Length: 547
Image 1 (cartoon, rainbow, N blue to C red):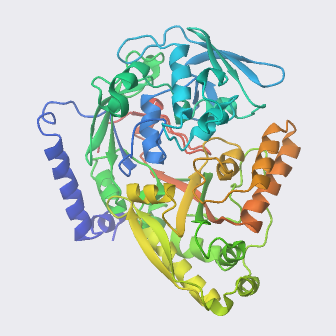
Image 2 (image 1 turned 135 degrees about the vertical axis):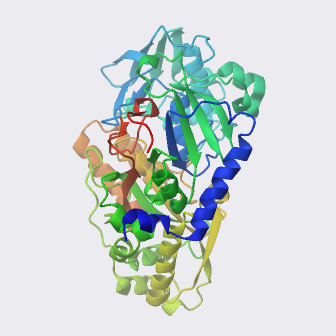
Image 3 (image 1 turned 60 degrees about the vertical axis):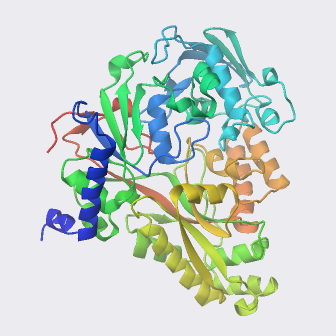
């Protein structure tokens, strides 16, 4: 039986879902679907975005769309994933590395035609730092002078934050200390430029403005929930001449079976993410030339809520980590070439090497549990393990991992675990509110530096989500980011990571991600595999008609 025959026979429920998805899309877009032009590029983007507001998004699917709509001082190069000039055509850095002077292009316009100036950048950054915005990524701006103090309320005057418009096209940024990855940060979605006048006029409903002023290579055509997001080329974008596709449709499909069927039948050109590859077909699919596997900076791990007993005890957390057979997980469940993770920071991260720590020792784990008062699991309460279920049920791999963990912890420690599966947005809410005991998590590097992984577990970072606070850890991260010597900086980071993983253990790394996406290189150009799995939409184009 051929691979295509197997794919077509996945099961009747998958075929029903695909049919239902297409019918729902037709219904939701009725009144315009008969006359609107077809997309130049159709991408299956994973789960439905939670938001398109750069200041509050947290998911990868959200970020891909936002990166098309809004831009910052820099953008990431499609091949290297390193910062290159965007809104700022050039900049100077002071000898001490603390002051950046950016010079904006003089042809910057919103998609609606109004000029973009440095005042818009200042507004956008202050808005992201404003505690009323509640940005989980506000920490990306804590490297700016007084950025953290403004977010935490220590200072009230935004003019004291180190971002200043010297004139409409010159911006001065003062940092707390030299930050070697700051130009990469300037490309991150939280630091992109959003429309001040529109937000001030419409408040929290600003994304519903029509037309919506956008600063990136695309403008928002429409967002039909559970159907698609249509992006249209922004002809006022400073680099519009190099935007390759005029119309891009982003489809929210969470089912791997549905994604594969839509791709095979020519309904989609590109499918992002390994989670959208059917697990029962992964071995065969990876043999195909249009299925692309690559390493990137991403780690799958477990979070503990250390504010809830018995997980407030580091001995319990360490014991649970020491009884996880990671090799078994990657060979039995994930099966795409993932590597077991014994550190949070993945191999290949710039100027850093992974830790060498104890990773599997059930005997030591049982001793730790006995010391904590739970010999052979006696007295240990039944607890709940939380994982997400994106729309369409693509959380099969999370469920399989949960089943393995449940068995390992029962067999080695005598403890009982229940599983709880939540829809994606509810899952994110539970994580943010610490409404869980133990949960599955992951982190994809925002830039190529160990700080993108280790910095989020400082006490004030909005992505911590464990309740764990350590002044000693905070001090190490602070010292590392003040250290100009790359070797010494890495040593300080390793000391901090040892505390995070091997001593206090509010998290347990499981494996390093392998990226998989699928598209036909004979038809699609402009996608380059890189360590951040970043693929700017404006560089991608279709060079042959659909199958």
